[in-house]
Amino acid sequence: MRRPSRSFEIALSAISCAIAALALTMGCYVEMLLGFGYVLAVFALMVPLSKDFVLGNVLAAIGAVLLAFLFSMSVFWSLIPFAVFFAFHPLVNWLQKKYVKTKLMHGLCLLAKAVWFDLAMWLSWAVVFVPILGMNNATWYPFVAKYFYLVLFVGGTLFFAVYDYMIFLCQRSVNIVVAKLRK
Image 1 (cartoon, rainbow, N blue to C red):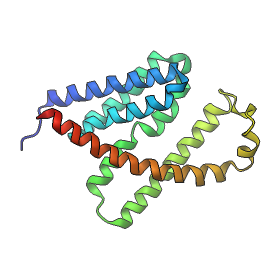
Image 2: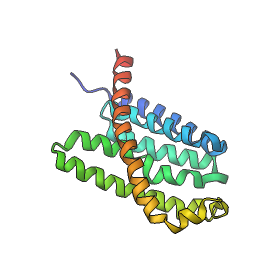
Image 3: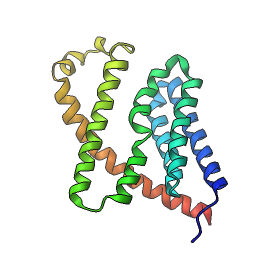
């Protein structure tokens, strides 16, 4: 099987970048759609990985974050969690699936990614949610402030374990869809 052309990689990555940037911009302007925008952007960034275009994925992720930042400068803080974690998580999963063979190493990779996720959520909490969005005025804030690290590291890690497994399944689905589109 021959490798797809360089122009195909560029086109696929550009489409991926455009969809991700549009989804992120939409999520920035309509707060209710922020989560949907993140998920759609992650799915879009999985498309170059379905054809093993690593450089295309990296450039699409960087381009999507930069374009979304330019289109939504007034609410750019909504992009911080995506730029720090979600944009590059599919690539790390792809690398793990391709190069890690033992169960012990898969466990260590899951642990490292969970720490990365927890640190990204801590950064988002410290930089965005409390100072800018004023979450310290919410009724649940005293409980979370008192048990912040427990909530973050236990709850965040459990959430991440489910999210990571689901992203592996989603990458498999994207691979199947892209393979059918090519035929």
